[in-house]
Length: 90
Image (cartoon, rainbow, N blue to C red; front, side, top):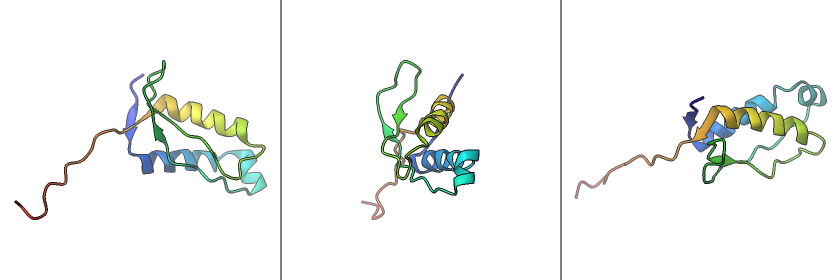
């Protein structure tokens, strides 16, 4: 499967959205702090990012790991740098 790419902010938002949709997290009313994804060399599955140090996640590690596994299979971190050019034109 070919992965779609997202920038770091969008990838963070997608993981956050999916985590906060989980039944156990909704029922407990807990707010998990989702870190920004970190670029890494592509692993054996082809994924080029990882996330660590979720905040307020005690007891939800297995749920979070499930979300990460799914999102890592669907998305890669966009590594392209947009050229903004010289604003002064010289």
